[in-house]
Image (cartoon, rainbow, N blue to C red):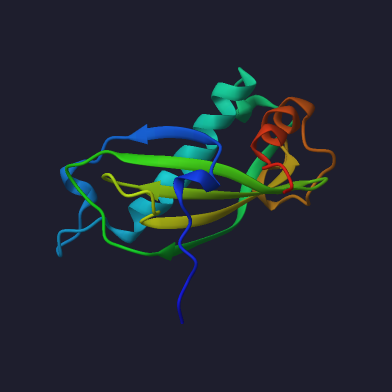
Length: 150
């Protein structure tokens, strides 16, 4: 079944990741686990930069409730990877992100991740129930990543 391949125009915030020799698997392309590390880095690095606070120290913290990846073409060491970030939904206690991975000159994503943060009480950790609302400092940062409706 054909998949719509996202392009660079589908993302709002950007970060570059350096690939490492160890990121490749035995077949010479990026290991599946590394894609998820990149998704986590793209989201949390954006939150640190955009909020100016240590998001781990907030009264409510985002824990990963869901992830997924669609693969379109192989990528790997030694070229850097451009990570595009956009937000599909800001709820009362959760945020749904999409992260596009790009390598080389192509405008088409090599992969796209889905990453859902659910906010919980920081004193009880990941096993606690979702809390509302998402911290204001986080909400203000992520609403900038919601594309305008067109």
